[in-house]
Amino acid sequence: MASYYVNTNAQDNGDHEVHREGCRVMPALANRLYLGDFAGCHAAVGAAKQHYRQSNGCIHCSPDCHTS
Ligand SMILES: [Zn+2]
View 1 (cartoon, rainbow, N blue to C red):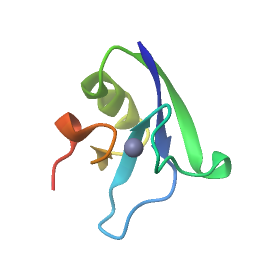
View 2 (view 1 turned 30 degrees about the vertical axis):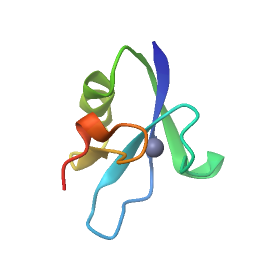
View 3 (view 1 turned 90 degrees about the vertical axis):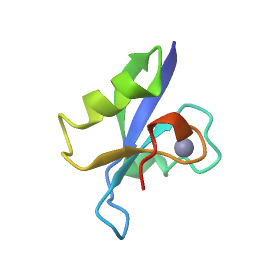
View 4 (view 1 turned 135 degrees about the horizontal axis):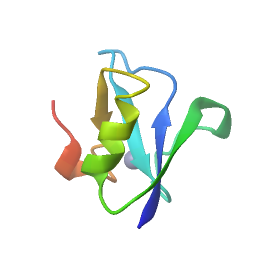
């Protein structure tokens, strides 16, 4: 299990990126929302979509959940 966070600020394309704890491009504390502990990024992105319909896995820490 790992802790996942979603960026409360959208990217230029409107995506809210989902990050795993320890990601090197983790958003600043003020700009992230804790989603919970999940076994993988798919469940984390699902949780993020409860907050932001346009959520996407971070290409660095959650490439399996990243769609371009
Ligand atoms: Zn990341």
